[in-house]
Amino acid sequence: QKEVEQNSGPLSVPEGAIASLNCTYSDRGSQSFFWYRQYSGKSPELIMFIYSNGDKEDGRFTAQLNKASQYVSLLIRDSQPSDSATYLCAVRRNTGFQKLVFGTGTRLLVSP
Amino acid sequence: ETGVTQTPRHLVMGMTNKKSLKCEQHLGHNAMYWYKQSAKKPLELMFVYSLEERVENNSVPSRFSPECPNSSHLFLHLHTLQPEDSALYLCASSRNVAGGTYEQYFGPGTRLTVT
Image 1 (tube, chains in turn blue, cyan):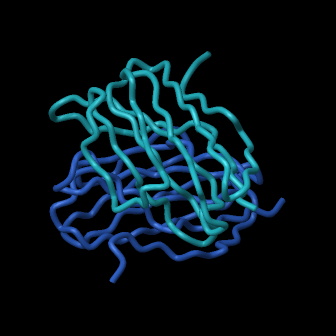
Image 2 (cartoon, chains in turn red, green):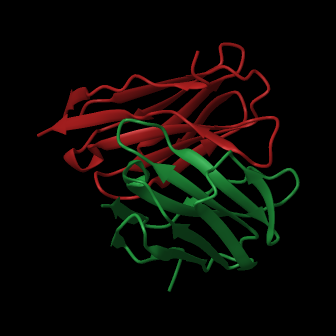
């Protein structure tokens, strides 16, 4: 079992729709959870982080965390073609110096 | 300069060459990281430095040699690389504060091709 799992996609949504990206993790003691956006040929850009159960909203983005189910998600409301990118989920483990473990990413395609 | 910068942005080297990648962070952070990103694979952590001390070395081959002279600068020295080392090499930094969330910020990366 991979430590951080994401569906590779692509996830295709029409412009204006809600995109829902999901991530599961295996280390129950994981502390913090991060979503990065990576455009093709570019480096990862931090979008949001969350460390408490529940929802955290920032503009069009909402991160949701359920530690009991070991599940974290990212919702993108009013999706735009410029949101088309690969979204990486990262988890900070309970052991190891501030180590982030990354999933392979989900490719999102937003069509006009 | 702001954020995390990396040079060079692109590098082509032969297997017998020696080259170095440079990273500089302007965020006042005190931890720095090297990652390797290959196609279809998750980001692989290579090295972690905190307060200029190496705290993690993820079984990286000795042909990769990191150096952290101060909390703002990080180098990755490369020698006798193999074609499978071709990848995007990413530098990141974070703030090491007890109880913090330690979010990492990435530089633009160096696209390395080994011929």
